[in-house]
Length: 94
Image (cartoon, rainbow, N blue to C red; front, side):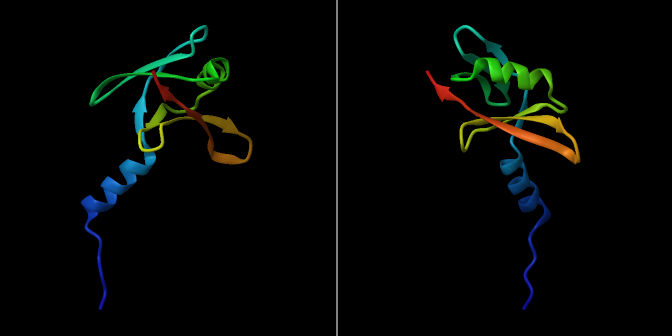
């Protein structure tokens, strides 16, 4: 017996794991990070605001918000890795 996965289920699973593309605004002094998703505006705090700003300056694709694990992933270029290297920043709620 063979089983098949519906294409829509596969796309939904991929969307959950790949994250939501966002354009974050970072306050380096306060560590505040804000961005908009289809669900609305979100405000978080990071312990590494300067590193996040540096990563965003070197990003090769839009940052992705993964709400299930509270992480903002920024992809930067890396020699020998075509897809780049993802840097994860844990964000905390206020």
